[in-house]
Image (cartoon, rainbow, N blue to C red; front, side, top):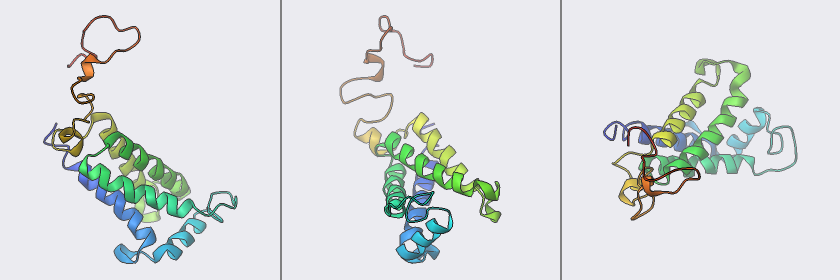
Length: 167
């Protein structure tokens, strides 16, 4: 599993970051922040938030979440938090695109759904051995430096039996 995780982690991370960069920049086919904000308005986020409540920071916040979460996910740094941020913002994208149906060719929610599923899988499996989390002893299953996951205390847990059957 450690050999396979370095493939989807950077792929998903860079796709998510690129999705954000496209909303604020002119690279990757984007139209700058004004174009990204207009796209948000077109998707129903009038004056910033969906439903027309007058708060303008939606576009920069959503874009910032993508741009921040992407490299963290790609590097495997703070993977659970990066994956949850990516899942949150891409879930909103999927909800907005849901009326268009599943297929991406019709501007549907297929692409955001795939990114949510991959980010969710990474949040559940952890970043793998070849990651910044592992190098810094932050990887799930390792606990904090000097403390293994199996040493953690859980309410109702008796003795030192493994937390999972495969440990």
